[in-house]
Image (cartoon, rainbow, N blue to C red; front, top):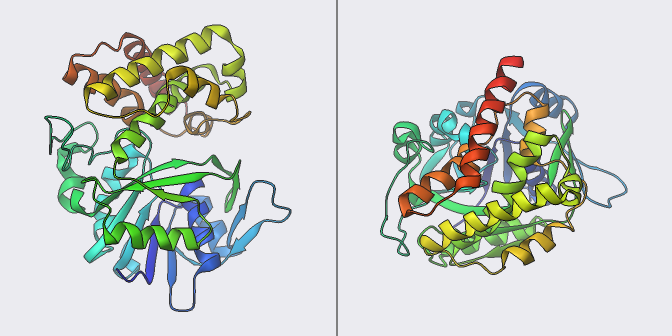
Length: 334
């Protein structure tokens, strides 16, 4: 799979960080472009894209093609989406316009992705689609689950100013085919990203990685938004940590019912969380920015899949009701 043209669709915090690293290492025969919008796009066009990595003395600044109109870009060899799950359906047509025969799309998503049950052999639900994740099957139809490469990101990132991104630590990314195959495409994409100084691993069990990360996301993201608390604040509060633990147990129970394998116990996952530091979760960042919250992939689908598998999720159901109303009020206020 020759990869000479790469577009990052949604160059916010995480997408922008990947774009900057790819642009820094790209050769003369490789073109990196980004699709962004608003003040962030304007700043990238004027001053370039700036990335400050953890412990770096000076920021990295790169110049690259930046647009809010994907129709101005040619078909790509590889598309990487930095959009959140609730933003994908509206962007499906734009992403589809960047595809040629053989183009793969790396979907960096938190929570349950729209393609989750494509070629799933560990449950009885292969090819099941959820309107909550993909209204009217728009993404499934325009992009196609056969193009998707799953990506689980363990990387704290924040747009601190338009055109400027800050990484909180040296993160890692796990890539996998929905089918579980260790394909040539997967190897080629991993090699390109590794060459850009990204910490990449590949797995035949991308769904298990999704559930392992969801243990933290389904708990910390909505609780941080509801309380406005940093990770360190949540970890220091016994009542909040009890709630986090209960959500993690619900995540594990639903994941187990769907055939996922967890490498950590809830207690080990909680202990790992203590090393993250005083960061704002992505949902708290969106709340403070007046943006719609990423609720459905993180909490809504946990509840929905709990019902599908007859696994009770009472704490997550309560959190879902509260954070959904918070989202309504936040949008009204903004």
